[in-house]
Image (cartoon, rainbow, N blue to C red; front, side, top):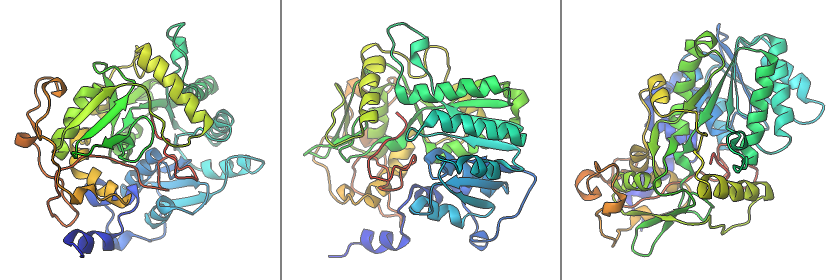
Length: 419
């Protein structure tokens, strides 16, 4: 039997993160008469790489919306996010791989005439070599403000803290950029809200229970705060403001892009309030249920030891959040709002249909999971998630990425996001 949800949702083809966010975020909505128009050169020419990633794509949409000319490197034009980027005005896609002999001419073309650049390297291929090559090309081109998405190396803070390998590469690139002396700012991003999924991927699975409730198991201590970020919704406008404030304001500092500071218990309580079902946190080892790349397994093993057993702060002991991020961008989307407004849509796009069922789980939030003593039970303060057509969905909770459209875009469907 065809339901109202089937009739109203499917024709909209909300398959990619960019599709979803376009529906929800009026900030970056593009007028129909501008979609597909040829790019118009402006005084602001910005370069990006790995442009189908969540961070870069969010920034590209925001920059495009305010009229900046974006020169965006992509590996190829396959995939839903690449298709989305092609529809945006003021966006010039440069197709090519950043490995091999073509790297230098490609980067020279990418940075030619660009005054600003947002660079987020990724962990496949030789990340450090690519990061250094990007910085060298930016210096040759005279880029006036170079923003690099970095992460900490925990081994510099304590002798018994092991560096997370995928973060240590970024930190090494950050140090190289500093040595070059180009005007640069370094953003440190929190955990993506989008990482949560009811699919069986490690670390951020919200596992659906028989009674309709959800369980998140992770090695983070229940009382240790973590930084949270809605990458698709908030990275773009935050970066716009960072660029507008300019390199002389930031003077090479590290800027935390995290808009909420929540313990795992607090996070689960807000999820429960947003989607109207219980979400339980279990402090335990990372449960790996699917085949994962060896490099990512090493990352997870060290994360479990350094951030879990040793309880090292996520960004290290020196960086403050979320006040700094909120001072840059006040319109952030918190995890409760994300769970209420976006999760059901993303899960539906992933082929899941839990939102069509009712839960038999109790609707109240356990006292141990109440957020700072301020959260009321989801039954009294929550609201039902809605379909794009405005139909109230049965109360449920989960979150997801969209297959084949993940931010850092692996060719396979395996999910590797910001930790």
